Length: 287
Ligand code: BEZ
Ligand code: FE
Image (cartoon, rainbow, N blue to C red; front, side, top):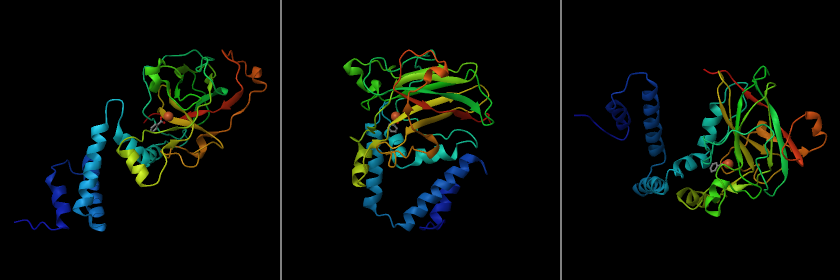
């Protein structure tokens, strides 16, 4: 008979899975079992604590819908999403940051120079830059896919009941033959991650706020290159040092400048901006 005790149980559980020896699945499964058991032994987890954890996960499942994935939010506020982004950033490439829940992969293609803001209030800003490889070779035809909150910190997709178009403030730009992208928009404002569910309870239990610092989201793609999912943040703005989902990286912070002498850039713009942001995206080869 097997002698299952509080130490031997860990190996017994690992052995119970008939996984391919040395496979990635086995490594991750065994590692997870080991860490979970070690954590439980180290902290002498009680029945009450164990049940509270399982109920918390149950509640995350209960509140989740196709539009609201509470487990991703949990990963975000625990810094797990950020950690996965950071360890998967390729050398020389632009650092990755949160995808967030508001990406739409069927957002419309937009001509360069489009104003994504239409008549929205806020500081009008020209966003421009180049997409290159890590040797700064231009990648003409690269796609810059962007989405953002408005000048009040709301994504139009959240306001569809109030008549907003979910595709507003987003678009896919194809870089020109110099690998440049350029468009105008309004500077976004900070907003809160959803805090009316179990993750909100966790934030309150830890005396934490739910604010994300203001940001622009991007996915940048080019043939033969590894796509990046990232964000641009703004120097000296609220929550830049304590973003609720740990998305900010120093290399992703920009400082909007007054829009002077922008005619020299030679861009045909739909709207005259008040400010300018320049940011180059760098992609690493695939593989
Ligand atoms: C966002 O950036 O849109 C976001 C990220 C994480 C959680 C909620 C929202
Ligand atoms: Fe966002």
